[in-house]
Image 1: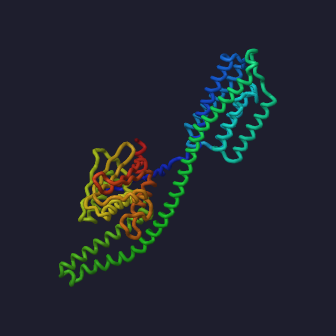
Image 2: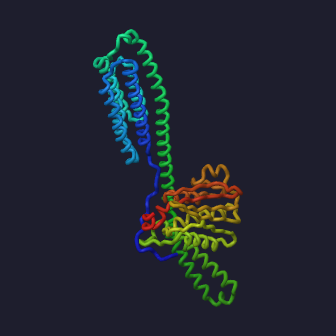
Image 3: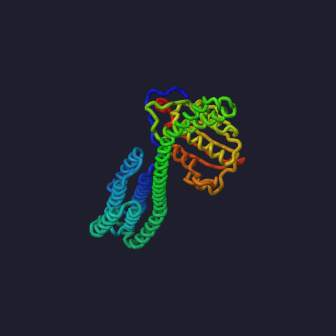
Length: 441
């Protein structure tokens, strides 16, 4: 292990998935508005030039022009923002209601068959908005429709069309109903999917909060136990030191060897307790240690081999240059937990593979044990889900999943193609690497 670094390392928070349902729904409204702009322009030109119904062309084309500016502004907001507020969705729908009202006012008011398009705005509001906002859209749409029944610019029909006004109204109503049906199916299903994703995201957050509360309780118990065990272990170390110098023991090589083994075991216990306290943040100073990835992983493998001399552990490193990272005990403990799980699952050979790409450090542990059962794979990473069939099992992988998640990474568990279990850790260098190196990437 290299010497401690002189400066405090900046740890970045885990990158949680953003609750961007509002942003996705605003993007859908922008798409719908593009369709409305294209439809309005096409309809105005067809009616004015193709059907010889004289419309106030310049005034009616102002509305889609303003809508284009509205969409451009909305897209600029979407690029800068992670999410969109409820008030912004309400104002966006309100703009569409007023734009539709303006177009209908200039083209026959309530006699225009496209007045039914108000239902699209009401339906979208029912899905996207809160109760008071939905009723606001309903009230504004109803008021606008009522106003259009008494105040509007009549259509300027040519004499040949005046006798077919009812037929034109029926055709326009049919086209409007088809448009409403298609738009509602296309956009309502997508918006409903966005809201379902949001609910699933909130459910994951609640589950993570429960798991983190469980970890906090476990950490408090482990820290308390580490403090309480420190005193008896120190007493044992003193007693074993005295035994080593007793004449009766020094004369017997077997007893000397056994005392040495007991001292090594006590030393190992003290090192484990020190690691627990460091993981809890109680023994970490302002200058945490740093090491390059290769030496850090080789030390973990060396220590694990020393504690498990009868089990083969191979370390394979990809042909990469590895940066210096903070040698945090929680990473060491996570990897050690994976190796211990492989041993307890009956493995006689373990292969630890380390590689990297531009942003991530990959650590895979593959063993030749019995692997994961289908039920275990479905619940992997949850507490007390274990294939070892003993009380308290399953906490190792649970802790690994949560440690990696808090560091902004992910864990994937599977069965290897040739048998055994495969657990892969993916850790971001933005969290692990030293500040000066991560900033320079």
